[in-house]
Length: 466
Image (cartoon, rainbow, N blue to C red; front, side, top):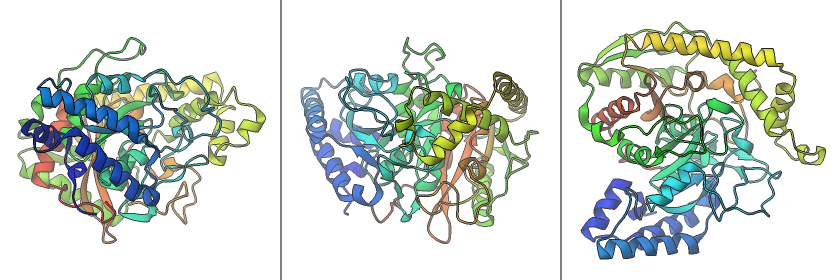
């Protein structure tokens, strides 16, 4: 496909609207044409509504024509993961067990903030059933594939969102992240994604995975995700766990990293990393030294919290299907049913003990960040593997957490963590660098990512499919 307006960043689109060189309707049409061209191959979208999208774009175009544009994203195409409620569209969560024949008249807080800022919603992106795993396939919507190699997984659970950004069908896509679900597909699909500090983006209804679950943007550029966070972080009374509105993170993006104290942990002390991935990430970490930061190779003093994470995750999954009938349970993703059945065996004491592990992990990381402004790790220890399976071929593990050791710990601690592209394997698959900050240091994480992006730009290369 040739380059079109939907390949521009959100900030570039806004500049083009301001200059009169592009219109929101042109951009929306290009996005819809691109979805039609690539979606059969990658399965990024489970819902597209051209009439509604074009009507919203026409309204934005008229505002720009009159010089009355309103909101930070007026006329910009944005896609939404099919976990988040969106008024007028069903939210089926990748599941046959959700009845589409009901009133869909409520927006999740993130979607409400997008509408208030006049984003043009282009569709809903695919998710594994109930967002339960780190790859994207479901009984309802099938397999989502990697735009760089359609035989490989796009990652998950926000795999459709990552594929939407990588193929240029929307410059920004909104995902959720309970154990890595923004960062995993960002790494596998070669885009930027950030899981902000818990509570920065309100969530309603509450996730069955509780305070592990964050909402965050994926985008082609760091600045677009910062702009999206400035929109999404608006308060919402329906989420009693949300924090206060934060200062705009876009304001400090260009501050740079000179003088920052940055830790680089190649393994977190317990993970096994593919040598090719390890080499690319180590090279990326050196860039921060060139940018004026003090980078030290050091592991935080933590053990792998996977067993405690499993207690919290599996119990949450079990709670999400309590009301289902035997017939409905029979239609669930078999892997989801397995973890629900395991989660149902966990006791309240097990859950409290896992919460204690989580609290201790949070304390250790809090103390670690008294000495280091940021932590760098690989986002993933491997590149994308075959689509349609939960674990890579040859693995003796059953669950997705066996190959995501760098992501779920920071859901347990609620820290901001981003994944940005840092290179490609010899097979042409993207590799991600994870940048982790202390709680409430979202702006610092984004600033560091923007500095790296400028030093090592990745935006010039799109997957051939896109």
